[in-house]
Length: 472
Image 1 (cartoon, rainbow, N blue to C red):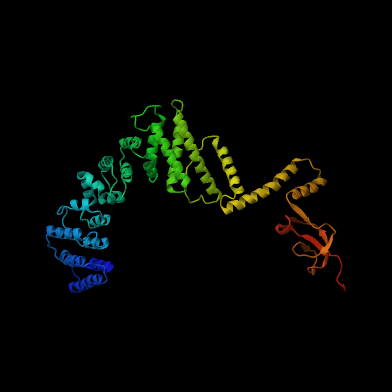
Image 2 (cartoon, one colour; image 1 turned 135 degrees about the vertical axis):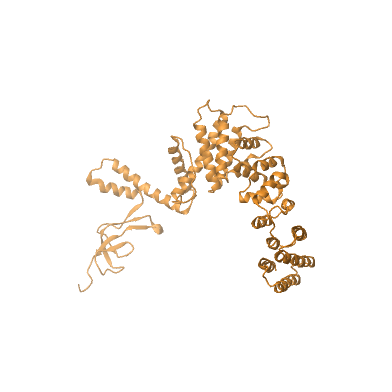
């Protein structure tokens, strides 16, 4: 029923066949009543709204006050009971009047539907500048309204300083849409003033605020995250140990330590856009704290350096893992700052961890198979290298290689001159016409790896007939 009514309302034009429209409209409403989709009260409202709708579409001289009163009655009686899509269709047919003729402010502040406010903007019944003016005049009510969410979604908020101040005044969460913290960070992103950096720092230093929530959300917006990281890191390295703005506030060093810990947790959770931003924050922090040319680092700064290093190790492990899987191209590009002398140790730690993971069956199947192959090759190669390092006469080289292969589990198949019966799994005939089970003589020894059911033939033994068939 909803879809049919929306289609009828959307399709009504001044040139439409009014009788046909009324018949189809009444049939749709009565059908909804018969199916239990519409109550009698809703049915009467829809039939009354049809009369208003016809006037809006066909009467170009309709009084703006009357039309607006009709819409308010429809909204007050129908919102929450009639489908949002149908309410939007009616609003799309509201007549267009000159700008400033009607004041939609009260409706905008009270309306909880972003969909209807978007419809107002599409119809140009109100404009974005009207919403921004309203945000200045009625900031407290606008902060709680769906109109603020519409401006945030459109990235059209022009007065972030008013909303920022209102956020700080409000202790309760907003009733719908973006949270208080999300609104704060949106205002921070839009405000280029340097004082907003200090304002955000002061807010996060307050013990009544949970800084990790806001700082983790900040990682969703990379430019804002890097902007604040530069500011708070600069404040941290110049912070005087033991000095706080107030007894109940966090120092910039403590706040930075909390943020780095949040970055570490984001990186641990997996590869996301947030983890890339977190890696950039870590790299910037390491760069600033390492290149700081002031007094000797304090103990808190040493702790920051340790936290940043621990998270950096995880970033580098992620990078190496993706490179090993050949999946780095076109994927997430994390950033890591490695100070001179750290890279060899980090690589060794990564390789040791990979070996330990392989020994315990940890990691992807492909990596486990590759590791198994590498370990097998290493065993052979290491023994051959050891043999090459020894002084071996040329006539003894074969015996040395045979010993290396034997130590690696390689065993001979048969012996030179041995008589046996032909088996195609272990033997390779030097002539044609040798059938399975025929007597043969080994003329070149084969090689196999392992024993019993796990035996793997590396090279079959070459054989020839040890007697000619009768008649030859």
